[in-house]
Amino acid sequence: MFLLAVGESSARIPGVSSLIRRRGPFAHRNPRLFVLFRMLYNARAYYPVLAIFFTDLGLTLDQFVMLNFIWAAAIFLLEVPSGALADTLGRKRLLVISAAIMVVEMGILLAAPKDGGWILLLLCGLNRFLSGASEAAASGADEAIAYDALPEDDRESAWDEVMATMMRWQASGFLVAMTLGALLYDPSLLARVNPAWEIDPAIAHRLPFALVFLQAIACLVITLRLEEQGHDAGNGAADRCRSAFRLTLRTAKMAFTTRKIALVLVGALLIDAVIRNFATINSEYYRLIDVPEWSFGLIGSLIAVANWFVPAIAKRVNHRFGTMTVLALAGAATLVALALLAPAWPWVGLLPAMFTMALLGFVGFTVSRFLHGVADSSQRATLLSVKGLAFNLGYGLWSLAFSLLLAGLRDGTDDSGALQSALWWQVGIVAAVIVPFFAWAKWSNSRTP
Image (cartoon, rainbow, N blue to C red):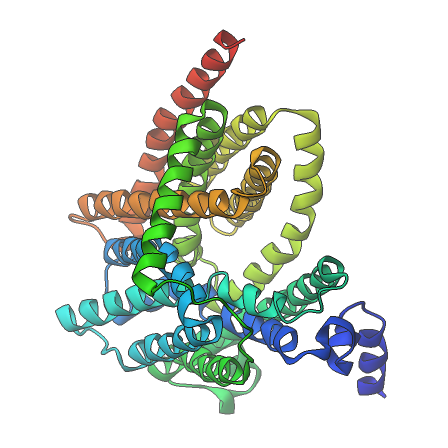
């Protein structure tokens, strides 16, 4: 009866029943596989425990943050050529490469030795580089191969249904994966329920990554089953890459020499880099405020649910105020959130942490809305790519700076003490950058007719 009820309820959700029954836009194989690929590729069970896994392996927190610079640098360097290669070599081949790299990167973490010294650091650095390379390879190619498979008649409407269905499946995947990942990493809750379920911590810490390793294999199988759509190979890969770089450089020059675009990109980048850096170390922060590890996934799921309301709030605020005013408000809110994070109040610190994560979506909505409004249709995709490259560069540089800050503060103290000190320093550093920038932007706008 329960399964019947679930089936009936899912059939009433637009898109879900079409996917299951292979109707509408999902009559073709590629859109169906696209939804499954996105869900399995993005909903990774290790997300709630990523930082503490690396530190439990034997890395220091500043080393882990430094590794995120490698991840961001890989995406920054490979994002543009991967797009050209997708058009030249074919989207399917690039997606197969992306999934194969994911298998290798997860295998490296499963084999990484605990307290392995420089070998551990080298393997973790390789993992972060491969993770960035995989994301760069998959970026855009998965959407393109699914979109091209849709019938040309009413293609935009069909694509809306595909994307809406993908977002529902991906959200469900995140809820399951994040909750399960934290429970696997810290099975103490299950052991209290039934002592027979007790697992050795050394094994438990690898279980979320073993699960994602299986997801990577599934992604590889999915990409091999994709059907390549006809694409114009045109010039060789080298020519395509050079053309893509030239177009990106021209668009970047336009963006950062057009004052109103440059102000929005820089203002949003300053906020985004700080919040994304916190997002990568939030599990260490949860440990700092005495939150049990098994609950990390539940917290992540709660944040995901709360973020469903962010677009509606962001839409209303953007309708009322100009973009720079909205970003200034977001910057002020970020400073307040950072100041409330720094005391590291047990459990209470979850509130500013959740608020900080909500600001990430708020800023993303604001920037996307602005760029779509100012970009010509012929340059919209490239401008969004420039935004992504700039934001990844900003995130990587702030990760590098934060890791150096942690390393300097760790002298004579442990990672927890260094982290809390760094959180206090972060408030002052970010305020010293954000406040003058938005003050100057307001003054600059007032002088411009």
